[in-house]
Image (cartoon, rainbow, N blue to C red; front, side):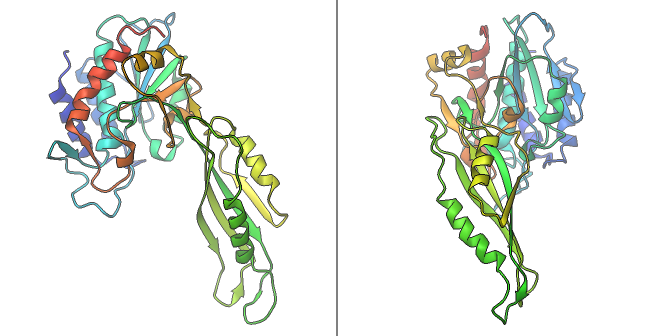
Length: 353
């Protein structure tokens, strides 16, 4: 079946009109599955994830994974339009998930259809995932268990169709600061909240020596704090949470040990996970060399994607802009969508990896 931009745009409009907030992706998954079936593909269903093999899969060939996600975040409060009604205005398509990651999802899927229409030096493999926005156990973490060996992966996230060849990792740290309870009217107890605020100030000035050329320094940000039970009781416990974005020069374990080493004895810290390390691909990889030859400019991305779960070289490339993601009145430009498939085909058709 020949590539039809009209069909692709129609599919994106249907996705916008189909709420797919994380852990509610059933209808969106059914919609993508129906499109695959209409194009003659029977996807393998891994939970709600959809894995689509090329028609002539050859284990002797290297495999290129094309991946985008079907879920969206919840709409924020500032929307002036119905987030679930696709609206075209002034060359823009508005709607929740239009930019993140509907445009990347449909354009990469339709590029897969075209690439698989002829013999390639590699196996094209398409995977639509769920729970990406929360790095859930039912998304890529589930799907990777049933993937064949992958040589390289292209993740269809909004990058302005420029290759994001590195992305920061993520580690969430939970701190517990201990004090001693007492009556607020008397000079007694040890205020855990005061201890915590002083510690937070020290952590804000803590620096990590290694700065990445692509990703910059490690970013450590306190995002949540909680203390106290009532107004007249000195709090004996204060908890706070830090969002840590790591570069490729440190593992999450290394960062954790560095932070733990500077904590006083009255503070404990736990990492929710060490799994989401920085990931990327060499600028000398054949797929990136070709992208550069096409005039693209590689860069480092501060945001996380499903590629963090993959063990193979990977990069992000897709229509739209990351700055529009998770915002009110999210949109993608129609011409961004229209140009995406031809760029994917120019990059990937006949590529030797």
